[in-house]
Image (cartoon, rainbow, N blue to C red; front, side, top):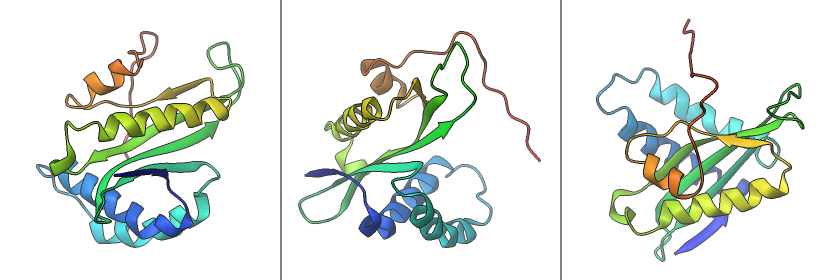
Length: 154
């Protein structure tokens, strides 16, 4: 198994990981415009790679996709809760079914946390699925007790 930080040569692979994640995550919901999403991903990855977008991937010994983790770094006005104003969001943590419960996601989380330390981040946040919550807690993630996530949809 190869674990690495993705680079510009991995754009097609990152789109495949995103598609696999979306297909599985939203299998019980209608997904609108999946084709539009897939068409837009390469341009997004090219524009943001190694700027505010970072990805960590696992590739099996046959070159097949085994796992992914995306990290989006944001800068906001500083506050007492994040004095540098730098934070990150984890998304698209995905392990192919045949590699689950073998440490793939755990290794990707460790890589991301090590990378995060080099980025002078105040914190990293994510939204855990029930399946992923134990993994994140194992690596030190805790529930935010101050703010409750809310959204407004258009």
